[in-house]
Image 1 (cartoon, rainbow, N blue to C red):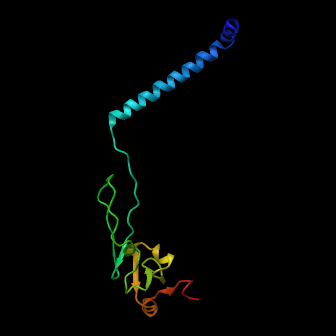
Image 2: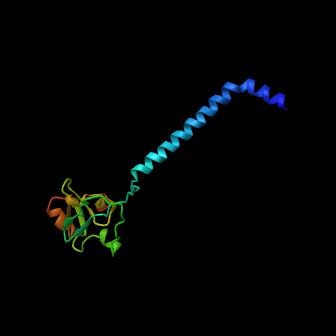
Image 3: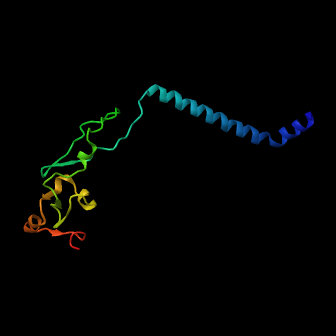
Length: 138
């Protein structure tokens, strides 16, 4: 048995030393990173989605994030209030186009709040030069 170990060592000596060297370098590098990270002591970064903007009586109002914080924000008391259109805003158009949409349609929800134009009826939208979208023109 002893002779087989000596024969194995002679045959693979360089490969064993090289592999052991790689393992030692990896362990030292990992420990160095752990020690360096402990030195900084930073708290983890938490990424949260921003609240959606809200339309109130035809005006676009938006919340502006003034700073970053790792603390979670409180949820709105009424989650539907952020996505439901105002009562007098049955149809929505954009300042950047001549089309109007149902306020509940996916097209209307994609319009930036600062570009939204609210209409209470199709007649009001047409009188201001807007055309119905493909879902309304059927």
